[in-house]
Image (cartoon, rainbow, N blue to C red):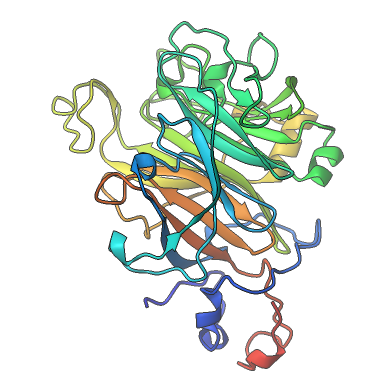
Length: 403
C-alpha cells in the first residue's frame, strides 16, 4: 500500500503505527467536531488519501453513474444511478478501501436500499445529478445542460416520489441554469447565525459558457428544502460577453469548465465549502478533432488540457456576501486542489462529492473509471476531524489515542 500524504508539515511517524486502522471503517463513529472550535479555513493539506472502492453492480446502472453522492446519517452513501435512469440508491461503504489502480482490485459497496426512481427531469438535455439527505430521505436535483430557452423549469425534489419544484423566484439572478448539478445541506447553526433561517439547502451549476441565465463559474444558492422558492444567492459569476474567457470574474474561467459535486466540510480545525469538477485549459468551439481534444469527440465546447480540481471556499467569505460586504461574483476560492489520485489525469471526469462529518471522511466520485463506464469513489481522511491526539501527537504511543 502506498503511503498516504499528511499535510500541515506534521510528522507521520506516530500515524504510521496505526495506519491500518485508518482504512478500516467498521466500529463506532466519532463525535462531530465542536461548532466554531477552529479558526479555519480547511485546506487540501489537511486531507490524507486512503484509497477507493467501486459499487456492487448487476446491471448497467453502474455505468455513467455517480453524478451525485450524499452521506446518510449512519455513514452509508446515497448515489445516483446511470444518468438516464433518474434513480438513486443507498450503498454500504466497504469495511476497507484499496489503493489498487485496477477496477477489479477495488472492494465493492453493496446496495442496501433502493433503487428509488424519480419521475425524471424536465428539459431537453437533463440528468439527475444532485443528491442530499433530509432525515432518512434522499432529496434530488436535476440539471439541464442545454436549456437555451432560457426556460424557467423545476429542478428539485424533496423526496424521490415528490413533485418536482422550481428553486427561487423567476427573476435575476435566480435561474435553473445556475442550479441542480450538486445539492448539499448547510450546518443549521451557520445558517441561523448568518440570517438564512430555514434556507439550509445549497445547490449550484455552471452551465457551459455561462449563457442563458447561467454563471461563468460555479454557483452556490441557498433555499428552504420545504419551500424552495424561498432562496438566497451566495455565489455566482457574471456572464461577461464579449470579454470572458479572458477577463472574467472567476479566475482562469474557460467555457467548458464543469463543476459537479460540492459539500460543506467541518472539523475542529475549521470549515470549508468544497466544489469538485473538471477545469478546462483553453476554450474552443467545434469538433474534438478540430479543437485538438483527444478526450471528447462531440460538437461543442472543448478545453484541452483538462484538470480534475476541487475548489475550497471560505465560509467567512460567504458570510461577508450575506452582509453585503462582498458581491456574489467577488467570492473566490482560497485554494484550488488538483488531486493526483484521480485515475484519468489526462481526461478526468469528477462526479459527486460528499463529506461524512461523523467519520471525518471525504468521498470524491470519479466517473467512467471502469471498463464499461463504471464509476469509483475515492476516500480521503480529514486529519484532526475525529482523531484526538491525546499524547501530544509525537510520542508514538498509540494507546493514548482515541477515535
